[in-house]
Amino acid sequence: MEQHYKLHRVSELADNDEDFIAALAAAFLEEVPVDADRLKKAVAEEDYFNAYQAAHKMKPTVDLFELGVLDTLIEVQDWGKFEKRGLDISNQLAVVLSAVEKATAEIKSDFNL
Image (cartoon, rainbow, N blue to C red; front, side):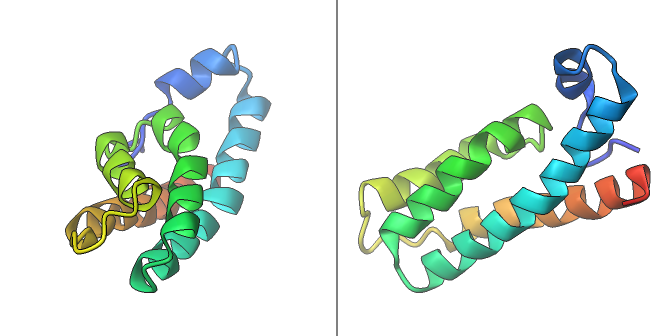
């Protein structure tokens, strides 16, 4: 439990309410993988606007669950925001996607979702 994410800030936000923590975990699973797929597709298509939008939307949840890739996600976000043409962001994207996949699998297991 909590290898690829941390619940410290989630628990703090939820005032240790187990039902609320479970609801936040479920929201993570509903939102973040979808946004990660959107981000992956946008980067592949050099769709800067959607890359920025997806990364920006993911930031608060990635930060709250402490996936450890917030700075890397911000790099991907800024790639889209500032339309950094010619910059290869694929390594940073891979780091973010890997962290999301690992946290998603672990949250599903930990919360039986």
